[in-house]
Amino acid sequence: MNKILILVALTLFLKPIFPVVDYVVNYDYIRTVLCENKAKPELKCNGKCQLMKSLAKESEEEKPINSDKKSNIKQEVEVLFFQIIKSLIVKKIYFQKTTTISDNYSNLYSHLSSCLVFHPPTFIS
View 1 (spheres, rainbow, N blue to C red):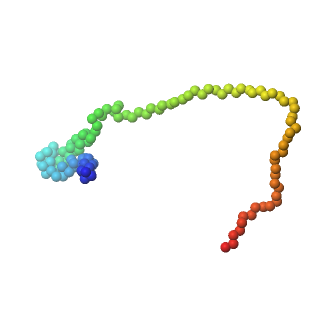
View 2: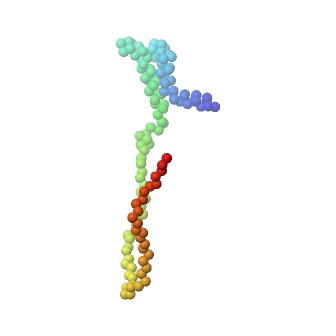
View 3: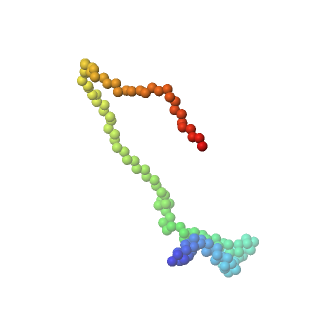
């Protein structure tokens, strides 16, 4: 199965080379019979005109059937989604005024004062 698949792939990849191979194999026949410039030997065509025709025919066959330029144009469309954001309304909050200050203040702050400087441990090996 793999050999058949490889053979088909090679055939597809080498398809543009077939007219050149045909020209090389049938060189004498193309040069003497099919050449259009047999009467003009100074051009030294030797059947190259026939090769160019067969290469042009192969390239035409490779083009897609629908070759409209309009259908080949790729268009980009940008879609923009948006949502209207309502403006932020700041409302004032009124607190009740308190005239008495509470006397129950608690000092929860503590500080350790030390003059020691941290030194990393030393290892003696």
